[in-house]
Image 1 (tube, rainbow, N blue to C red):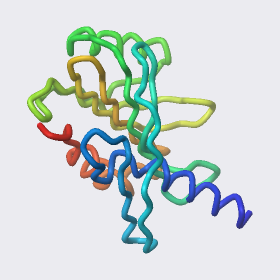
Image 2 (cartoon, one colour; image 1 turned 90 degrees about the vertical axis):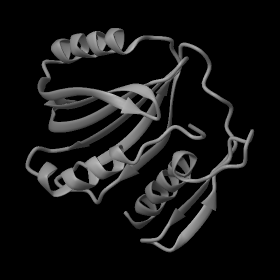
Image 3 (spheres, rainbow, N blue to C red; image 1 turned 180 degrees about the vertical axis):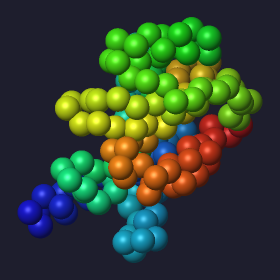
Image 4 (cartoon, helix red, strand yellow; image 1 turned 60 degrees about the horizontal axis):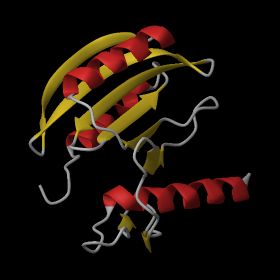
Length: 172
């Protein structure tokens, strides 16, 4: 159990560095600084995501509760789409997955169209509540998604909101 915990924290830390840290211009490296656990690490310089593919450069986890770790991740979807198209595609996916939308709103992040959803439903047999932010860029969508069981969500809601509200596109 101890090794599994160390490996999980280590992998999460490596992944987290991409979006949290400030990398060198033209270099995919970032620096992740974790004040809670007292360490800093430079992240690997992975290749950029190819068109039509997705990558998750950051994923963070809270301590496990009843077999699930509340979490937040950033997914980059390499695609060209408008905010209206993305909103409709997402609503269709929610309908297919039988998720219910609690709220939806649009605004700007770094001058780009952004969509924010609060929704819930069952995923992989686990009842979850989500907060998701989609920022539509020229040739990609940045999708930030936070999730926790509905009974735990209020405990994390303020942190999830602060995390998503802090997102900005570099250099814009």
